[in-house]
Amino acid sequence: GESVGLHLPTLSVQEGDNSIINCAYSNSASDYFIWYKQESGKGPQFIIDIRSNMDKRQGQRVTVLLNKTVKHLSLQIAATQPGDSAVYFCAENLGDDKIIFGKGTRLHILP
Amino acid sequence: DTGVSQDPRHKITKRGQNVTFRCDPISEHNRLYWYRQTLGQGPEFLTYFQNEAQLEKSRLLSDRFSAERPKGSFSTLEIQRTEQGDSAMYLCASSPQTAQETQYFGPGTRLLVL
Image 1 (cartoon, each protein chain N blue to C red):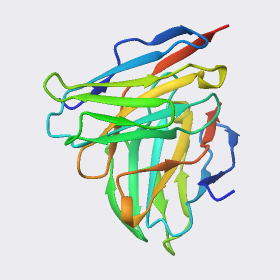
Image 2: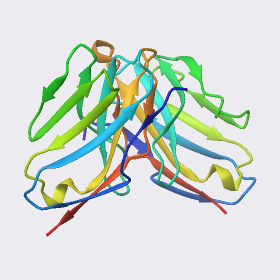
Image 3: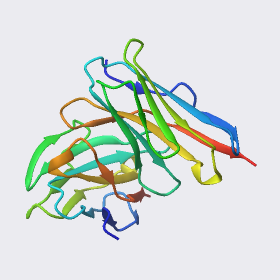
């Protein structure tokens, strides 16, 4: 079936190190992927997106990599800061403008 | 603040009561979405509007749930005869016509049914 999931429920990273959050998706027809950040008590916040015709896209301190061969998506956060603590969701748009979210990975920043 | 806004932010109600939530999308966004999120899970799609037309409803949206967007601007989500299983965060998102795939979320309304 169609699903988006994450390999690790919790990721602990030392402040200043790079973080890598992984995601697997199962619908090979998906053509648009989004990473959202959700802080406690808040709604998901758009971070970065990527279309299926790309394999890499960079933003400010964030990079998304897409490997369509193995249906894998990752979010890299450079020089992780305390403010990066949140739950990160990958999501796929199935072309009908519904977003399917995974369960999320909690990123914990160690001092 | 020009983002998506939702009201109320928190609602506690007794089982069997009706509740109504409001969402104000980003100005001029023609699409508006409702999601439900339970603890530890990602948001789940409920329904969406393009302007005032409700285009799709998830099977998660039982007969007790109704959503409206009468003037194509703000939207309301009503839950009738609330049940404890309705306790969740209800999220609203909107997207512009020029980039309909990119949805911007509001802060959500957290519902607790006692």
